[in-house]
Image (tube, rainbow, N blue to C red):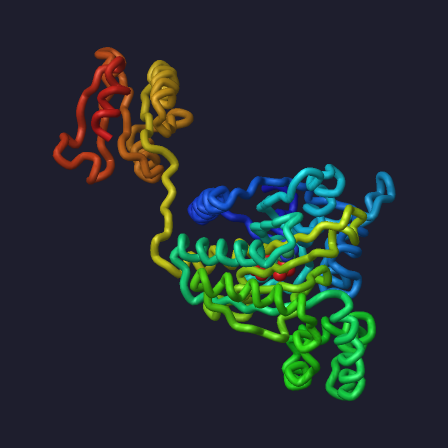
Amino acid sequence: MSEFQKVNALTGMKDVLPPESAQWEALEAEVRDWLASYGYLNLRTPILEQTRLFSRGIGEVTDIVEKEMYSFVDPLNDERLTMRPEFTAGMVRSTIEHNFLYDRPRRVYAMGPVFRHEKPQRGRYRQFHQIDVEALGFAGPDVDAELIIMLGRLWRRLGLTDIRLELNSLGQADERAAHRTALIAYLEQHVDVLDEEARRRMYANPLRVLDTKNPVMQDMADQAPRLFDFLGEASLAHYRGLCARLDDAGIAYTFNARLVRGLDYYNLTVFEWVTDRLGAQGTVCGGGRYDGLIELLGGKPAPAVGFAIGVERLLDLCAQKDDIIHPVECQLYLIHQGEAGQRTAAQLAESLRDAGWRVLVHAGSSGFKSQFRRADASGAIAAIILGEDELASRCATVKWLRQQASSGQAQQESIPFDRLVTELQSRI
Ligand code: HAM
């Protein structure tokens, strides 16, 4: 026994093994197809970025920046770095850096891991995955609507029901400033029910106080002045424009005046898709418009809107239906005897792969019985046997392992090596 103390994955960070990984791959393939059907192209950014990108972009007084980021000083060059807690800030950084909007607006997406140091529970992890979609350079409510309608289509494609849309508008900076004054005055009157965090945030970021989960503060938050009531005509028109288009598409929504989102960059449209089927972490997707972020991060002003889906939560929902995928390792499993058998198997396997089959050659040398057990466990349709007799006659024995493939055929048959590909192609 080694003295090395075994290593486990970090708390809140999960391995994904087969067969579960097959559900991930199937979802990713479906999502890529769905994104392509709306003209979205892939933009990949690094996981590590400068810390100040996120503190500036997401906002200093947010849960993410205050307490959830994996940040450290790189000892090799003293840079302050952070593992991305979301995609948007990095996508915007990249857009600015490469002058990506110079000739036209862009629709882009990214998928991958993001990191937040939260308390893990079902649907809440420290490394989780997002499907992030951003429409950069688009101002109108038409694109806000397009994004939401697009999500409606994804839920349909995945066969998901029981997922509802909540909408709000956070207006523009001047409207938020007027509301902020009223909100601070209100919070000052209710200081007695505010928890420590709310007291700390009430001047720096009062809107965040309304985002509280603290049950004691719910009544206070419900009665607070609503930002929506401070919206001017242009902001209301944007909101109505969005609603009209959702109505056209038959997408139902609920207005939620308390929906403020956990990141500071939003204006006008914000939305979340929520389900009751996932316990406490029921938000599957969140997003909204962030017309000020590109400029805030040093770019030429340009409007933008986007969303991110939590992949673990989406897969949890998908797993509640019964069409789970059972992955197979291969279609054909090659069994052999002796060194000559193994070498012939390796060569035949290559020509079978040339023909498009997924093939495994038994590794090492074992008895036929244990090779057959492996062949069966691999999910293969057929085992192809290359023993001494087969090598002598240059005819492989094909043993059908699955009922449906062998129906109407012999359980086992002998096929000459040089006809193996064509014979198999005609059978399977
Ligand atoms: P967010 O609401 O912070 O938005 O995250 C989006 C989604 O990620 C959530 O709705 C949830 O499904 C999932 N999620 C968040 N935290 C966790 C966690 N700890 N464990 C598992 N899943 C989680 C954003 O990140 C914005 N960047 C979205 C956006 C894109 N807005 C505009 N463009």
